[in-house]
Length: 225
Image 1 (tube, rainbow, N blue to C red):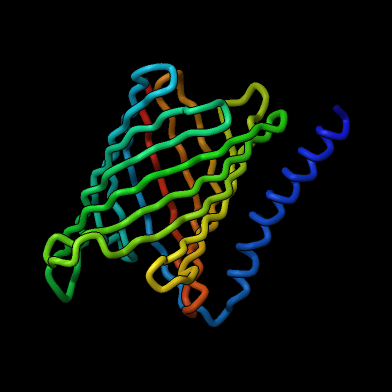
Image 2 (cartoon, one colour):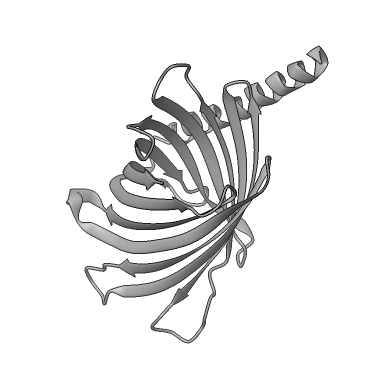
């Protein structure tokens, strides 16, 4: 039993170390072009059964100078196969505002496989996501397939409504066969009551093949019933 708990602790520390180390490396790129964005979202989630839930979530994303960059509405379902494994799927209708050309309209589909494990109050989650986009104005269909791999860790603070978490996500563009973006995540969620939650996070986007990075502040409000 002691050996098993020691292995879990070492695994948790290793995962957390990987997550923490990445942003420092990205921020060390002093010559990189930097921009700031703000994302806001509102999610309504309904538990249909003990294992099945559905949600709908509109979101507005702002670029620098607080200009609207894109907005979308997303809906999906999540199902708990086992205590350690979830599956999910969602659909997104997305509108990209463009200054120098016509506004772009997209469909996006995504499918998730989520493994999860708790080490006492420390929660670990590994999500694999397949996503693909289809621009409405062309005839190419879904032609932007991406695999996304996210490792996330949160901590359940005893007798507290706050829950901090950190994570890292790799975006693997399938057509070009390369990792074209890495997302680092730092988040704090606050449980207002049994139904309402609010979360604030900082995202750092690093682009391995480009000298630029994007800083993103997000604000999300959730109703879960």
